[in-house]
Length: 292
Image (tube, rainbow, N blue to C red):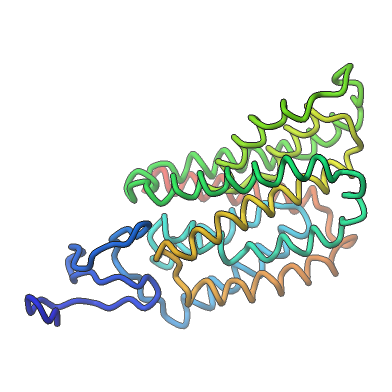
């Protein structure tokens, strides 16, 4: 019961806010807080999101696009769309660290690029995160199918982009100024903080078109920038009151397990085949969002 009015309330330890049973706001929001109905996740729900995180971690390790699996499952079990995106970002963020560690040698000699790109990536991630937190729930749910279709399209084009970059190293005749990378990387980072799926493809395209270097080194740079974007957004989200911690902790463990499994399966599973499956899954999910 609300001690002030006597109205029934539901307490949400995950979201740290009070809402009445009809969804009206009873507590005073903080700087980043948004009044939303508290999701109550059952054991079955947690098992589902945990398995989705295992699959997402494995897919990210092998081909990318794990968010297209984990995010829809969170909304399927009843987590509001904005909170699902916030929780997904926080839960899957640790998975980027493994990719950076595996490619650390390819970052040698790129310190000047890192000093410029990492702050831009972090600021863009924060800007995108703030934009997400201030997006109306209904508006974000309207955007979901189009964001998923965009991410699916980017994932589908990933291999073609890689081949083009390998086959056309002369795509620009002169070394581009690092300052020319600022705007496109910043724009990609804002998108990454807002939704994130397909961020790696966008960053690789931006870096490949503006910097003259090998695909391996550009990929390592891309991974590092993506970590900065997601880490900055995740830290912001920790103070938003929108992280569903019961799901987030289960997903974080699942993503780490999935990433380990993905590393062991490398060489046994064709990334192109897995990527196609994820793209098809993403398109199906987007259509379901559009028609329901």
